[in-house]
Amino acid sequence: MNRPRIPVFLAQKLHYSKRNKRQKNERIGRFAERLVFLKFFFQGYGLLESRYQNPFGEIDLIFKRGKSIAFCEVKFRQIKKVGLEALSPKQQKRIHKGAQFYLARNPNYAPYNMRFDYVVIYKWGLTHLKNAW
Image 1 (spheres, helix red, strand yellow):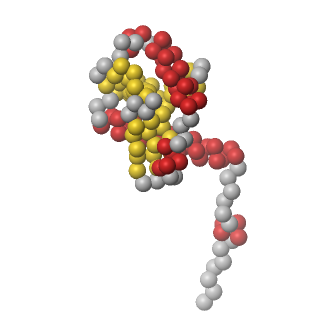
Image 2: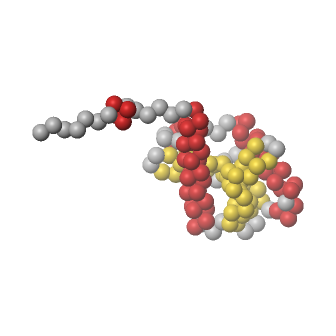
Image 3: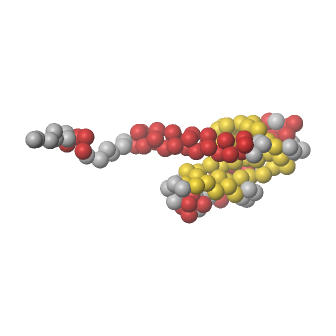
């Protein structure tokens, strides 16, 4: 009995173009942000902004709980160690400036305590660093 042959183009590893790879990474990033949203939501936080655009860049998630505001950066990496090292001082400065811009635009949150969190989602888990910087 002859087995049907698999066409060569199906058996070959697919190579993503730069555009497709960017789209794939974008989908993974959005999924990671949804997971972080659920984590914060079940801890009693309310979402103020998602993917907040400002002149300094983007802040992934902004949460409020009580009299605290958490500006959250989310990274997805295959390996935990790589994820923990992925946030550069330049990115931290950009997020801090964006947070100041957000508070200037929303003066009712000015008296709140400001906190910067960093969440790394990796293959087998999630690490949440409160007051990361």
